[in-house]
Every structure is written in C-alpha cells, then in structure tokens.
Image (cartoon, rainbow, N blue to C red; front, top):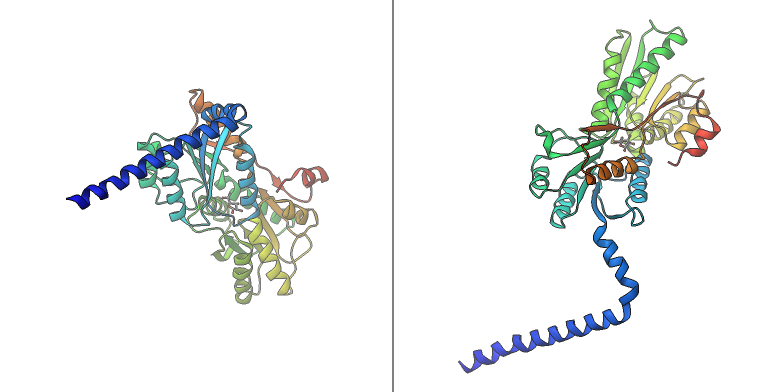
Length: 344
Ligand code: GYE
C-alpha cells in the first residue's frame, strides 16, 4: 500500500514540473516574440493549406512541373504548401495523401504515377471533406466524384499530333506509300501520358497500312532507360525509319544509342526523330535539325491549379477537366525568342 502511494506521487510532481516549464516558456516566448510574430500567426490562419504529392523527378519536364508548383503555392500568394516527392512509387503517394488527410489540409493536389488503384485513398479524402485536384495525369475511377477536377494535358491529342506530323512529313518527302518502319519508346506503363500518347498515335497509324510498328517498349520516361531500350532495339532491327519517343529524356538516351550504332538522325539523317515535351535542350536540337519535331507538353501547371482553387474558394463551379495550351515545334518555329523564354 505504502509503496503504491509513493509511486502515484511521482507523476503528480512530474506533471506539475512540466506544467510550470510550459507556462514559463510560453510567457518568455510571448515576451520576446510578441509584436513581430503576431501578424504572421494571424496570416497563417488565413492561408490555404495545400498538400501536393508529386510522383517523382524522372524528367526535366517533372522538375519544371515541381518548380511551377513551388513558385505558385508560396506564402506571398496566400498558401501554405506541404510537398512530397513519391519517387515513382504509388504506395508513397498513397502514404502522402493519407498524411495530408490526417493533417487536415484544405486541398490535396496530386499527380498520379499510374491511373488505377486510387479508389480507397480518394474515398478517404472524400469522407474527410478534402477536395482533390489532379494535376498533369489522370486517374481511372468509376466514381468521378472522388476528385473535383483535373488540370493537365490532352495526351491523346499529343499522340495524334505526332501521327499527323509524320503523315505530312512522309507526304512532303514523297514516301507516303513506302513501307515505314517505326519504333515507339513509351513512358511509364499505366500512366495517363503513356496511355494517351500511345492511343492518339495509333489512331493515326492504323489508317496507314504502310506504317510498320517494329517495336513498342516502355522506357519509364528516363534518359537511362531510353538509351538501354534503344540499344537493344538497334541490335534487333537494321532498318528503322522513325523513332517516336514519348518524352525528351528518353529521346536524349535514344539519340546517344543511335549515334553509337553509327546511324544518323534528324532532318538530314536516316532516322526521323519525334519527341514530346519541348524542353529547352530538345528545342535546341530541333533548331539544329537533330530532332525533327517536338510535341509540346506544358509543365507550368501551378498557376492553373491555383486558379481552380481560387474559384473553389469563391464558390464557383469548376469544370471536370482543364487542358493547358500546347504547340508543335519544328525547325521552322523554334525561334530565338521561343528558346529564350523556355524555362525548362
Ligand atoms: O511528358 C514526361 C514526364 O506526365 C506529362 O511525365 C507527364 C510526362 C512528361 O516525366 O517527361
């Protein structure tokens, strides 16, 4: 009996000490930080808290997209940004989204690495009453109420633009009836950009019996993989007329492999190169005739997402899908000013 009374007294004394220290430090903090800190505290309360789950950092495009998010969701613009990089793993994105839910953020913005497998976590966000905005890529869910809107590119259209450009180029060079051997380097398997660009390109390709798809392989949107995959394709096929690469980074890798194999590329060369993204480095290669055409994909999406958030904040109705503006670049329209304005 006696012993337990003694034991009980310890937590009481301990708690009193903790309370005393807390009170004193609170008082001291107030004394020293008072006037200067207060305005920040009240501003903080007004800020819109946005949790962003970025899928990774596989490409130049992605780096630019991340920068656009970080430059938009700033304190000056009235935001508090919680940013997480999932390093290409869906499970990391799901974890990040769950942590945003438990932190009770105002909005969840995320760029889904693949399209499927999001129902459960998006349902959790919905039940917590947190609006979800998809950025860049889309999700494949039956219940469309699981997200508010998607801000990104029209990937099918991008693929179709690649096909239409090839169609016209073959006409221009009088090869519209010759057999054309085509290789496709595809991005991350199951991602909207890979699915859409493939679909759009095939919509055009299937109308041409003379377009022969020699190979179509995934190369993860990275330069290293683009190089590796292209190397093995070059070993298998001696006659390749066109390479359609679904992003600039894979194109850079493929170009290295092609040049090592001794074959030539571009406007004057043997292999026509079609790329997607329109990064500064790739557009310089377009200007130099190394890459024949680059289908632009605009990564500067932070502002667009912010506009949507502002609309939601003021109770306006938003569309289910917003597409960013995008162009097609050949040596004819990659001007000095296009190059100097390009921030990625
Ligand atoms: O084209 C590629 C990136 O989903 C649009 O992902 C994006 C693509 C982009 O890694 O470079």
